[in-house]
Amino acid sequence: MKQIILLISFTAALFSCTDKRKGVGIVSAYVPVYVNSPDVKVITWQTPQAIVNGGKIATIGNKLYQVETDKGIHIIDITNPSAPIKIGFIKNNLCRELTLKGNYIYTNNLTDLVVLDVSIANSVTVTSRVGNAFPDLALQYPPHTNCYFECADASKGIVLQWNLQQVDNPKCKR
Image (tube, rainbow, N blue to C red):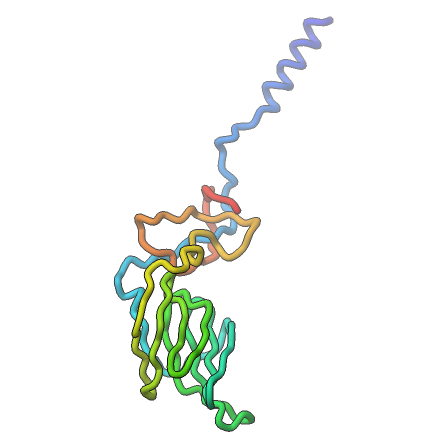
């Protein structure tokens, strides 16, 4: 009888083991979008854009500047506060913060600190850049926690954003 119980226990233990190397299957996971070009650091003046993911706001004189998170900065004329007019957009990758002083915008471009001269209408000039001043702004992880994602690979370039997709056995979880 002891041998039968031992055999049943051994068999149950054998079949209860799982292969921890198995993946999670197909799940929703964030996938990095890479850019590997010097153009990623180019800051340009563009026509007004729709505000989709608005962030920090600052004003100076009759102009309002609003961060479009990770995309750039909206410039809005508020001479008539009851009828603001969008006058332009500064395309600036991974822009998250800004502060103003005179005709200068201090902001981040990727992980760099940049100073932008906006004294000439409808134009922007980078007057100064401090490389890697904000290393924590690098997008090595997706914007959410408790989620699966494909691990970032620095050899593929800079992660510009994360897209949610169906992924077979993603390697990372946060």
